[in-house]
Length: 290
Image (spheres, rainbow, N blue to C red):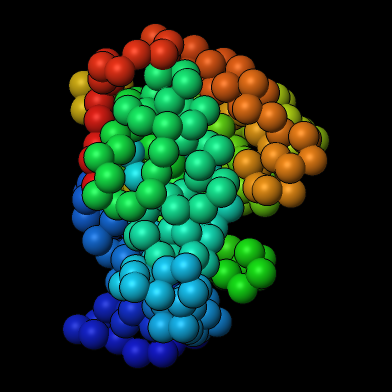
């Protein structure tokens, strides 16, 4: 750990130990999100996100950019989680909400709406009224990285936030967008007490890996004893992890990932998570509006 500074014996926001110190001590997702948005542990990412927020893109010159780490978005009792690579420089880094304001988010939220997991097919601003039903969207890296490429060190520094978030949610299923998220998430799950197959499963679209706890009666997800249990839901002893191509423009423009493909996969994931997902304008699950 690089000691940049401490405050009252605690790592400062610029210290690489800030995420691990605070993430594992958070008793709920609200507290976790608040701590996360104040993190400055990765100098390169801090410099980039703030430079982009200051220079802006011409189309958004009248915007006041968020320019901070972007927290997860969705209900705090969601049994389904979507994990995808870092916020876009002029997307989440601008709007302050995960996958909001960029082409990847447009593709993802339209599919979530088609399945019945989102109140509307568009995500333009943090106050546009969008609600998610039974699903929470998050990232293994919460700051926009240059060229959309976090370094391994940045990934590892940010990892405690993801570990704590998954632990607090205690989901039944996780959709992983892209190989980067897959490679980041599996060690998090192993550390949380989930037994991974050997050899470790490789990423692939529609690859489904069902995990069970190594010690069902003792192991609990990262985040602390009992805190990983969603409201009114006992800690699960089975977790389904589903691989999905990332809805990047590279994948969607080339047809590697189409809207029907993503909708079909989300239907499968919702079923594995125990959600009765189908197109409907009315919320049936826990909701969250930012």
